Length: 286
Image: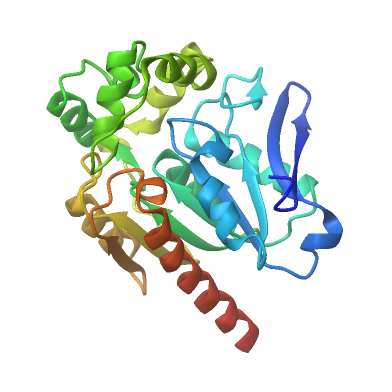
């Protein structure tokens, strides 16, 4: 990351709450648009977004936070909702001088990105979201976990064994997944800590059906989707586009699964570059 101009910072947003964020130096970021990457539930920020950092950091000021209870981001507060995550990430960005940004999110991170856009329109200019849902309603959550034979969302998202991890990764990808057993063991140890708190995050991600509310965003939204996402399928993609309305765009990456930004990194990066170039060209014109 240092080769690409990023260094890690620990930002205390309030006593007891800290966010680890990879950020560019101030001198390297002043003249570039700010892009904030929000990771999914499976790992930390850099593991999710390494390829994208490499692809766009020469033209954009890239920020990669770890969400609360991932990596070194922690809180002693009881909040577990996507709104709480959004408020803390927004506070951390503002503390390091980010005034405007585009949020690029995957899955759980994109749900938080939508909340950031809703709660902090002065901060979030645009949203690019992949393989996600605006609000993860109870009916859809139940359908997903039952489809794959799990009793609950936390047990689906937080594998405890090598076999469970490989099964989860297979669901998340379009193509076959291969990982040596010793690597899988290390992966579980390194990236699946804070299990109690993450289980609480997973539960808080799900909204009771009768509490789901329409969302109205002022920002332009672009959706990039793996066409073989087995968790949030193309039906979810189309429904998300419909709910967002306006001039929301949706593009599919062929043979991409749920973690499309990793599995089809070249195709994803090409689409992301086109979207960002279009957004900021229009911003300059305006």
